[in-house]
Length: 234
Picture 1 (cartoon, rainbow, N blue to C red):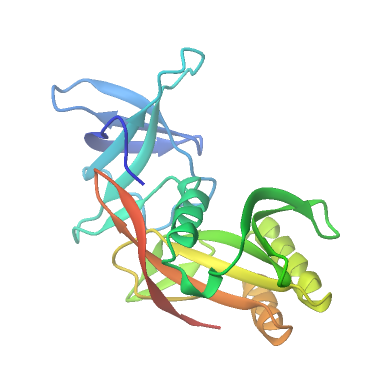
Picture 2: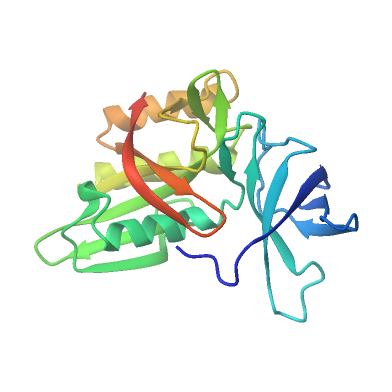
């Protein structure tokens, strides 16, 4: 996924009201940009470090710039825009990078399904096999050497696990895909210390036949793309 037009950069000053961040540009001026991340962004906020943002030409947007990447003091890059995860996953499936999800004729996004009024991120279908329901999650929380999800209690994420369990019980293929948008993460596991209910449901999911995958993303100011599989501990 190429960034077009190219990303601009500045220095992070602060994030506030969840969806806003102030950034200082190289000329010393300050702008407010949109923060497209509903999580706590734990261990992702480093005032004084470099951030990169995209620019929209939509005249109706109050804040035309969107926060895309951050640098950490350890020189890691983090994908801040969680909305990119689905597009990255779709691109990687189509290009055959996520080999476990290959061999399907059609791919659809945001399809209604389940018992709790949900939409699956990606639905893969083929006449020769059961449909495959893929729920995508962006993983950015690094603690020590481990990547964790979620970074705050997520009732929505818990609902998605219940929906996947239900799909598996019907004989369909159900997959939870962690898109790792932090190049310091090589191992992913549920954050039981943050959301014990989610961690418990994840174990229940695996025992019910849900597949759990994690794939690393190569991040830069020019492009982002999924490259290789990471280990998952459930």
